Image (tube, rainbow, N blue to C red; front, side, top):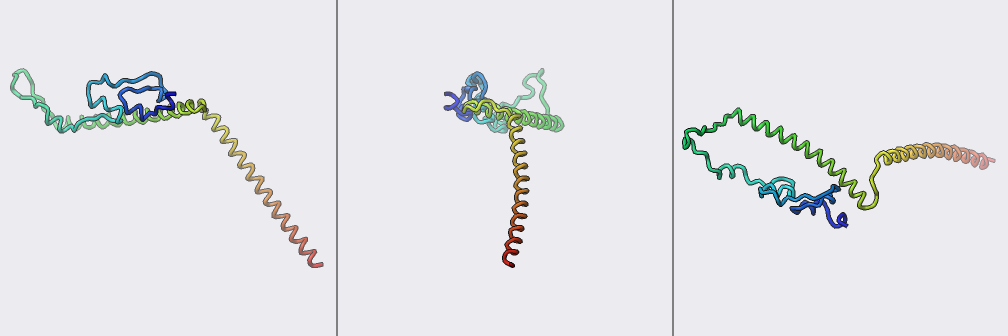
Length: 169
């Protein structure tokens, strides 16, 4: 009954997910995540992060020289460029992972939907074999139809000749 009443979208809207809707066992509970911006990530598909510039501007800047043992942090352009390149590569890896997970989720949802409506598991090899058999049958029927069209054309030509012969006599 849960299959009929729930959808993946309706599950993602809440903080607790029933994974049976996604074709998986168990439940996920996001209410125990302490960061508010991260807790909202499952329902929106991305974390609800405040503007990074505003966060950095609001943070207390470290005061240099308050503790003689405390070293001040300096950031060079080169280190920022390296961090930026690393973050871009990390983002690309995450995107590839997301694409892989979306493909897997799509397969699981398709199988789950087939189970929910009573089709059972889909066997693509059987479907492909049936499709090839149907294509071959269509080709055979087209060939038979062409042969019969030729025979019909020859019969019509013979009929015309006979009618012309009868009309002449």
